[in-house]
Length: 294
Image 1: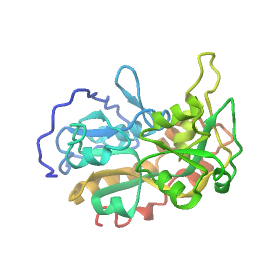
Image 2: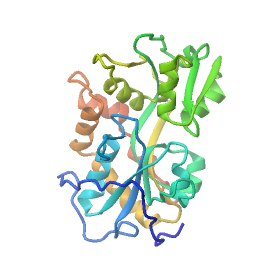
Image 3: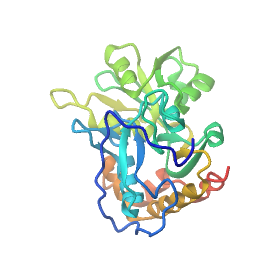
């Protein structure tokens, strides 16, 4: 996709506020496509990480990261809702949902296949996998092997799906085309657990409640699988923009604002010190080496 291509008109789009913040100072020179208004794709139904409210505004750790990293640099952008299974097409050319985008920030793990197809920027978080279950019918999941006898729902085209298929081989794998579908599987009893990134599962468990105000879901005690480095994605061939954005993400990552937003978005308490949160969820900067030049 050419960096200078015309953007498609959108049926539903929301301009996020560009609130100032001290963590990242703005600079006068921005490489294409950040030198004009761009479209950024987010997922929804992941409260804490990213969720679209009824008024169309996105909130959560990832939209806030974009505000800090791009908004504070003077980049104007429009937010676009993307499905978990079609974000790659939207970044390529938008043929599936006609919402072509310039950048995706949507719980994307760094993989070799994606590195070969897109310019990946970051990482901005690291997290292992976690398991979500109905709060009324909790299941003990302390380690990966505990998933094998269960009915496990995963979303298509995710690293969680790959792990479940290759390593866990559960008694009944349950298909989901979105986070919402896996939550519906928990609700109707056709799945015992929903497996995805731990921080996503934690955000859902803390934010979604019944009509009576009780938690609808609980996140398992255990975390499993290798650490996933979460990155933003640009179309291939945007090396200059990738390196510029990587520098801004790196500055934000080392600021107090990053850990404060992590604490706020995922409701970590005072017993979770800044040092502990950084140790568990802040990626090592060196893991970004080669991403923009692959």
